[in-house]
Length: 419
Ligand SMILES: NC(=O)c1ccc[n+]([C@@H]2O[C@H](COP(=O)([O-])OP(=O)(O)OC[C@H]3O[C@@H](n4cnc5c(N)ncnc54)[C@H](O)[C@@H]3O)[C@@H](O)[C@H]2O)c1
Image (cartoon, rainbow, N blue to C red; front, side, top):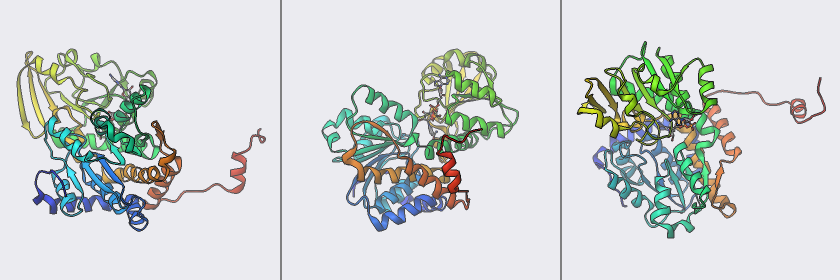
């Protein structure tokens, strides 16, 4: 079996982590059991570009149990858990091409290795694998039945491809499933971003001013958790509805030019470029902490920051670089401006990835069954899958809910009964 990982000797440690995550991924566990019996993915080649975490390992196991041949590469050069990669290869016989800390060239080599001789299904997180297929392996695209995209930034890229007529195979927008973003983006990113900043710095949140750039699902989650730790939260936005929502949720809302001078901790969660730039660094307080939890490392302008710095001390602590500006102030950048929750912590908790990856696994099955009806467009996840995942998750949490009586169902479907 082909693979490229850091150290196979880490497998035993990785296995423990994968099994630890499995305990909290009961919906995916049920799907794995059923897939093991029914083999809905028998012989299907799946190339996946995802953060190589213990939760992703459990998705790969479920797909493999369904009969798929899975090849995995990482969706970020710094997010790979090397012990997980080792265990996937050693204990679960899954081909993994990923090492933490690779340069850009090896990152893309690994994506090419995951693509191999050509998949029938692709799973992406950020659209690097799908765009590589479109740019470098066009001949493989007609053989691809469908792709699933895990994150907001990836879907933005794929919808731009669809709009430009460049998309060559169907995409299912897994990120946009309610069973994904309401939980993963909000509670997963909210908690794990806070955890990444805490693990990297050990800073006390209580009493600090935290600036949250972007009040989408991720930003909402992080703002809520930062406030819960006792921080004063400022939100910056470009969208008036979201800005208004943040204001009515009780946060201060202002432009970044104003917030820059007030913040102790900054975190970008926008999917946009250069959200914090030179004009902001120049007015920041001595000791301000800068983190990003958006998909790419483009939200904090590190090139601009370097230009303002008279000295850069790399690794003053694990995952922390110190920039000493010409004005004498020190700014601390976490995780080289990459996803702080995956670089400095373990990514989302397993319980929330349970829902995202259950949605991915059921969508893979859907693509196999419905491939003849799909064309090169971006489709939503079928509502039945979202509801199924939510129902199973509630069951696994021991939560029961009411159901409509016959008269309630009739009432809700009628238009005649009024005042
Ligand atoms: N860290 C993780 O594990 C993780 C998990 C899920 C998603 N993501 C990534 O996080 C980012 C945000 O995802 P989301 O689901 O919250 O997206 P979203 O579209 O719901 O929200 C993004 C928000 O940022 C705002 N915005 C854009 N440019 C801005 C700017 N210059 N200044 C201030 N606000 C700006 C937008 O108006 C929008 O409200 C994406 O890159 C996504 O891929 C990361």
